[in-house]
Amino acid sequence: MTDTRLDKFVSNQTLLSRNDARKAIFTGRVKVNGETVTKIDFKIDTKNDSITLDGEDVVFEKYVYLIMNKPKGILSATTDKNAKTVVDLLPDIYKKRNIFPAGRLDKDSTGMLLLTDDGEFAHKITGPKHHIEKAYIVELDGEITDDVIKGFKDGVTLYDGEECVSAVCEKIGNTTARVILTEGKYHQIKRMFGVYDLGVNELHRERIGALTLPNELKEGQFCKIDPQILTKN
Ligand code: URA
Picture (cartoon, helix red, strand yellow):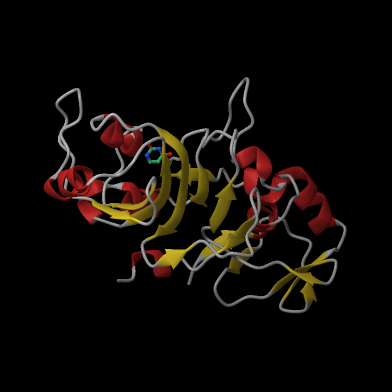
């Protein structure tokens, strides 16, 4: 059983501030299991009690997991003084929950980005120990040779001496590749191709773990997911 105060619950799970949640409770707009409750510190069981506000269910979500199709020009960050961030694209209900991007895509990259308020899960998805695959479609400014493919498989040593673990570079056109990484170093794909004097023109993440970005999710759109799907093999 998970006990929490009614005012805290209503505020956390809706757009209401804590004060407005209290007002809603005082004024009889909140029911617990069908009974109006006007005590703001009334204890509820978030697993079993049913709560309504103005007759609408208030559903308990401990954490939220979203995937977004990140557009170009948007930062993978929560806030920024100058640029628009992926969190700026979310409705207020999510901003209020302190959702952040788990893992990054460069400002000029597009595709699948996970956003959550579950820090532990974010760590699991992004941490190198967990080897969650991330697949990207990459458009280059030159031809992909067998050397590049072999080099990625053997593990690229970046210009600064940093070693990358084995990665897949699958040629799907003369200058287009699908790259599969199990780690996420800063600008990793750009730096890996840089070793072979290839520049990245376009970079799109199509998959994280077992979940492929749905075609119907247009740039800037997001949807909720079951997080377990990302860690399935
Ligand atoms: N590697 C990069 O260089 N950029 C990205 O956005 C993702 C992976």
